[in-house]
Image (cartoon, rainbow, N blue to C red):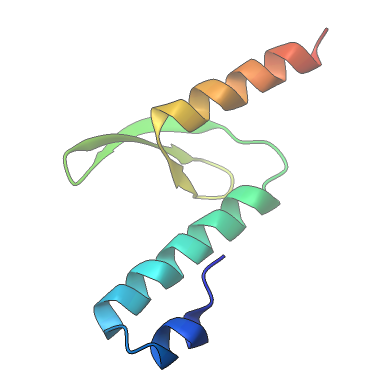
Length: 75
Protein backbone atom coordinates (compact mmCIF):
# COMPACT_ATOMS: atom_id res chain seq x y z
CA UNK A 1 0.00 0.00 0.00
CA UNK A 2 1.17 3.46 -0.82
CA UNK A 3 1.39 5.95 2.03
CA UNK A 4 -0.67 8.82 0.63
CA UNK A 5 0.31 11.35 3.29
CA UNK A 6 3.98 10.56 2.78
CA UNK A 7 3.54 11.06 -0.97
CA UNK A 8 1.86 14.43 -0.37
CA UNK A 9 4.63 15.47 2.04
CA UNK A 10 7.19 14.65 -0.65
CA UNK A 11 5.41 17.07 -2.97
CA UNK A 12 3.75 14.68 -5.40
CA UNK A 13 1.05 16.34 -7.49
CA UNK A 14 -2.63 15.53 -6.93
CA UNK A 15 -2.90 13.60 -10.21
CA UNK A 16 -0.22 11.20 -8.97
CA UNK A 17 -1.84 11.05 -5.53
CA UNK A 18 -5.14 10.04 -7.20
CA UNK A 19 -3.38 7.24 -9.11
CA UNK A 20 -1.75 5.96 -5.91
CA UNK A 21 -5.09 6.05 -4.08
CA UNK A 22 -6.81 4.19 -6.93
CA UNK A 23 -4.11 1.49 -6.76
CA UNK A 24 -4.58 1.21 -2.99
CA UNK A 25 -8.35 0.94 -3.42
CA UNK A 26 -8.04 -1.73 -6.12
CA UNK A 27 -5.59 -3.76 -4.01
CA UNK A 28 -7.90 -3.57 -1.01
CA UNK A 29 -10.83 -4.85 -3.11
CA UNK A 30 -8.73 -7.68 -4.53
CA UNK A 31 -7.41 -8.78 -1.14
CA UNK A 32 -10.81 -8.74 0.57
CA UNK A 33 -12.69 -10.80 -2.03
CA UNK A 34 -13.81 -14.27 -0.96
CA UNK A 35 -13.75 -15.69 -4.50
CA UNK A 36 -13.01 -13.87 -7.73
CA UNK A 37 -15.10 -14.30 -10.88
CA UNK A 38 -13.29 -12.51 -13.66
CA UNK A 39 -14.79 -11.11 -16.86
CA UNK A 40 -12.62 -9.94 -19.73
CA UNK A 41 -12.85 -6.29 -20.77
CA UNK A 42 -10.73 -3.58 -22.32
CA UNK A 43 -9.70 -0.59 -20.26
CA UNK A 44 -7.98 2.23 -22.12
CA UNK A 45 -7.57 -0.20 -25.01
CA UNK A 46 -5.73 -2.76 -22.86
CA UNK A 47 -6.99 -6.26 -22.04
CA UNK A 48 -7.97 -6.42 -18.37
CA UNK A 49 -10.18 -8.53 -16.15
CA UNK A 50 -12.75 -7.23 -13.66
CA UNK A 51 -14.08 -9.34 -10.80
CA UNK A 52 -17.88 -9.55 -10.75
CA UNK A 53 -17.80 -9.89 -6.95
CA UNK A 54 -15.41 -7.21 -5.72
CA UNK A 55 -14.95 -5.00 -8.84
CA UNK A 56 -11.13 -5.16 -8.72
CA UNK A 57 -9.31 -4.88 -12.05
CA UNK A 58 -6.30 -7.08 -12.83
CA UNK A 59 -4.24 -8.25 -15.78
CA UNK A 60 -4.08 -11.66 -17.43
CA UNK A 61 -1.00 -12.74 -15.45
CA UNK A 62 -2.89 -12.32 -12.17
CA UNK A 63 -5.93 -14.20 -13.50
CA UNK A 64 -3.86 -17.11 -14.78
CA UNK A 65 -2.03 -17.37 -11.45
CA UNK A 66 -5.31 -17.21 -9.56
CA UNK A 67 -6.86 -19.98 -11.66
CA UNK A 68 -3.72 -22.11 -11.30
CA UNK A 69 -3.85 -21.66 -7.53
CA UNK A 70 -7.47 -22.79 -7.48
CA UNK A 71 -6.59 -25.89 -9.52
CA UNK A 72 -3.67 -26.76 -7.24
CA UNK A 73 -5.88 -26.29 -4.21
CA UNK A 74 -8.29 -28.96 -5.45
CA UNK A 75 -5.62 -31.67 -5.26
